[in-house]
Amino acid sequence: MQKKDCVSIKFCRLCNSKYLIKVFDLGHTPLANSYSKIKISKKLRKYPLKLNYCNNCGHLQLSHSIKPSKMFSNYLYKSNTSQKNFLHFKNYANEIKKKIKNNNAKILDIASNDGTFLNFFEKKKFFRLGIDPAKNLKKLSSKKGITQIDDFFTKKISENIKKNYGKFDIITANHVCAHVEDLNDFFCGVQNLLKNDGLFIFEISYRASVLKKNTFDTIYHEHLDYHALYPITKFVKKFNLNVINFKTPDAQGGSLRVYTSKNKNSKNYIRLKKQILKEKKQLDLFKANTYKRFEKKIINCKHKLNFLIQNCVKNNMKIAGYGAAAKTTTFLNYFKIPEKNIKFIFDDNKLKQGLCIPGTKIKIVNPSNLNKAKIDILIIFAWNYAETIINKNKKFKKKGGKFLIPFPNPRLI
Image (tube, rainbow, N blue to C red; front, side, top):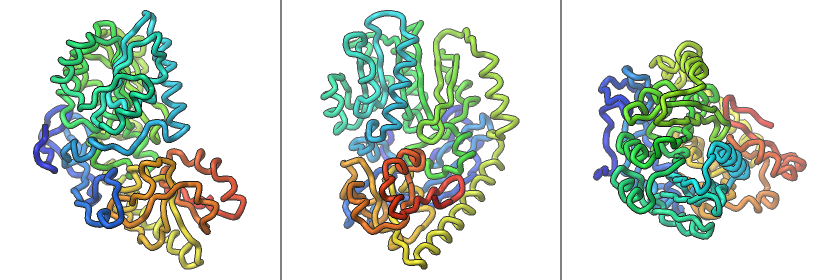
């Protein structure tokens, strides 16, 4: 386990190559989820935020790693805050249940958060176990009747789990692989707990979606990796696992869901091969220059958005934001939008209300105050939920309020 608060990553996290190339430098930012009171927020320590590309396997990763306990021991993100996210997990769980033929199947969810996903697996039919380091979320999971271990998932922990609960039919890990300090140890733990005929399914942010939508703000210290199918397919083989299928759901702005098994046979071989070829030839995911061009696009977007905001301010329009997501921290710190131009940011998560966006004095408030506040423009920082936010605030729109969507190109609605 990492001892220093911040360490430089010298090797590729997937193939262990030392041939890393810096392709994007976002300067220094505070930890994305380090929400705090106004007196503390501006004094938060900032850490380097840079992207390195592996010239050997094509993986993309951060240049520095932050001590996990500083980011995950007390976590304010909850899986069920968004209705869109809730429905995504519901549909995802229903799909898995169709694949399980035996009764009393055992499912382990790694980084189970508040138990939202596991709760879709009926207690009468499934043995449900979650593991998550956030002690504050364990209480929420317990209320749903879910057993949850408050710790980081490692090979060592997997030994304890196997001793107490045996092996599992299904293991899931949703948007956590990019958070893991030691991926090799993590996958060793999964391999140790998965039955021979079991499935390990993990969902990760898809690098192709980040490039297509210009969503640079998903780059922050919690996300050590920016995945593509081809490097992952090679990586999992080290652990006697094989990619047998994949999907690209819209969750989290564009995700890659990977289905792995100890069984080598896959009915989806041709489909997998076509997607990998697309990543190489059409999407250019494995060329360092692709990411340098991406950086230039983001800088251009930064200038456009700041110009648009300045025009709104000159016309005496009052601006607020919606969505105090982790990505909002990267967005505001890198785009350097003057704090005085944003009155506050609305967010549905009560755990965040009353605190500030890390590194700023911008306060997070309850959305119930929106119609009372004299706001003309709402910047939708939680852009992946833009449709939901706009539909939820029709009254604001009827009164003449406008929404500012920052990606892929800044525009007013």
